[in-house]
Length: 82
Image (cartoon, rainbow, N blue to C red; front, side, top):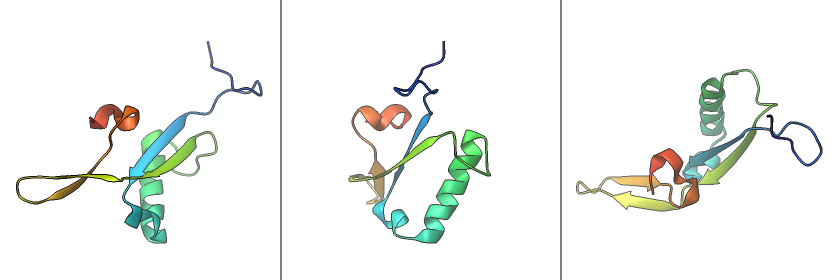
């Protein structure tokens, strides 16, 4: 059975995009990431049926070669690990 939002309309799928803050300050970067996300969800032209939520990565992991990698922690980590 289809989930319904409070208004009685079908609930929109939620897509959470975790990005470094530097991406959110660059229009070209946002456009590139958004285009890629839209391709992944199956409609490169629009996202009218999807609730896209942008979150900044605030946690980082440093590897043994001193490479710095953004990490998602907590319940939103999903497939990324935590």
